Length: 390
Image (cartoon, rainbow, N blue to C red; front, side):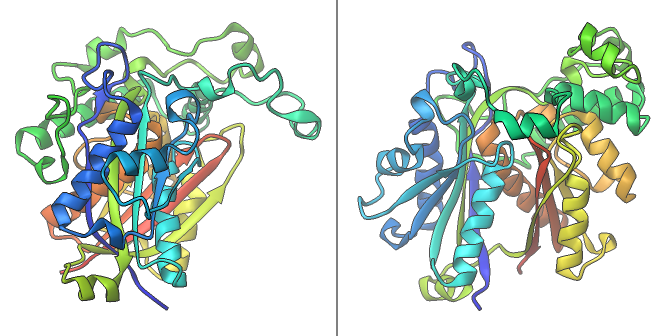
C-alpha cells in the first residue's frame, strides 16, 4: 500500500470578501489558477505528471459553477490531458480534497494529485447556490426534524450556552487570533506559504488595537426574537468579532506517493498519516470536530499528547473553545499563527489553507504531528493527522 506525502503547499493572501477587498476583481478561475501555477513553479514538477486536480469549492454557482477546477487548471497552463473535479463538503471542502487525493494515492489510483480549494465570496456570495430553491429538505427530512434546524450563528450561540463559554472568554479568544496572526505576519512566518496576487502580499483581515472593552461594546450578531423564545438558554454572546471573516482566496497542496516523489527527486515535507470524517447533531451543527478528533486519534494509534500542533477552523470562537474544553487541549498548541477570525475563511479554500499554514508552523517549531479539523454545515467534520518528515 502506497504512502501519501505532501511535497509542498501554497496559498494566496486572503482578501476581504467584499467589493472593496483586494481580490474582488480577480475571477474565481484566475484565483485558483494562481495557486495551481504557484505549486508547479515552486516544485518544478512537470504538470503532465498530475493525475487529477481535486478542488474544494462551496458555492458552485455562477462563476464558480460547472466544475471550476477544470477551467482553472487550463487557465494555469496545465496540459489539456490533466483532469479536474470540484468537491463540496461545505467548509471542509479543501480538507476533503486533500483526503480524496491521499486516498487515491494510497489505493494506487493516483501517483500525483493537486488538492486545492478556492472561494471568491465577494463575487459569489455565501448561500447563493440555494437561491431560488423553495424547499431544500423534502418531506422525510422535515419529518425527522419537525422543529427545523437553525443557521450556523445560532448553532454557535447554542454551543456557547451549553458549554457555558462566557462572553469575555469568547472575546479574548477572538483578540488572540488577531494578535497571533499579526505577530506571524510581522515575523515572516507566512512568507513561505504565500503567493502574492493582484498586489496583495499579506492577509487583509488582520486587525490590531482591539481590547476586551471595545469588543464588549459590540452588539450580538445573530439575535432573533423567535429563536430567543425557542432557545431561552441563549444569552447572545456572538458578535461579528467572534465569527470568521467572509473572504476570498485559494490554496494548493501537491500530494503524491512516496515512491513517485523519490523518482522525481522531490523531498516530501510531510506524510498524510490518518484521515477521518464524522457527523454529529445537525442542530448544534458545529460540534462534529469533537467526535472527528477522537475518531482520527483512535485510528492513528496516537494520543492527544503526541500531537504537537492543532489547526481547528475558527468558524466561531465558541466552536474551538468547546472542542478544547471537551478534549482537554491547551490553547497554546492551537492555531498558533492565528485562525479564520483574523485571517478569514474563504469557504472552499480554508481546508487547504489550514494544512498549508499548519505544516509551516510545524516546521518552524520542529514538531512532528499536526492535527487539523474543521466543522461543516449539517453537523459534519473532517480530521486529518499529518506527520512532518525530515
